[in-house]
Length: 142
Image (cartoon, rainbow, N blue to C red):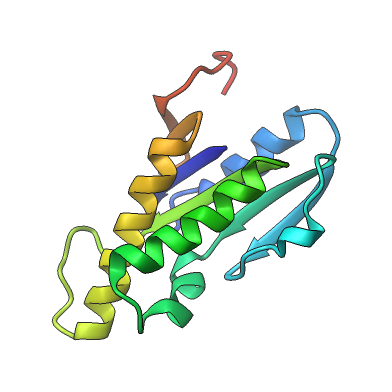
C-alpha cells in the first residue's frame, strides 16, 4: 500500500498519476469519496482511494477510533488482494475546528491516516509538487 499525503491542492493527485504511469499495466480504479466494494477487487487492478473526508461522513455517529478502524480494515483487505494508493489530504493544518462535527471528522481522519501510514509499505508527503519519502524505498527518479 502507498500513502500519499500533504496539504490540499499540493500536487498529490498529479504525483500519483505520474507514479502509476511508471508501473506495470493494470486496470486502474479511481475511488473518490467512496470505498471499493470487496467483491470487485482482483489482483490485476490498482486502486486509487481519495477524499477520505467524504468516506468518513457516514461513520460520524460512531466513536472516532471505531470508525477509523472499520474503514482501515476495509482498505487493508483490499490491499491484501490488489495494489492500493491512498491520497490523504491534510485540510485542517493543525487547526482544531470549533464545531463538534467538523472536529470529529478531522480527528477520525487523523486516526485513520495514522493506521494507513503504519500499514503502508511506502509513505510519501507531497508538498507543492515535491515528493518527500517518509517511509519505504524509491528509485531516485521521482
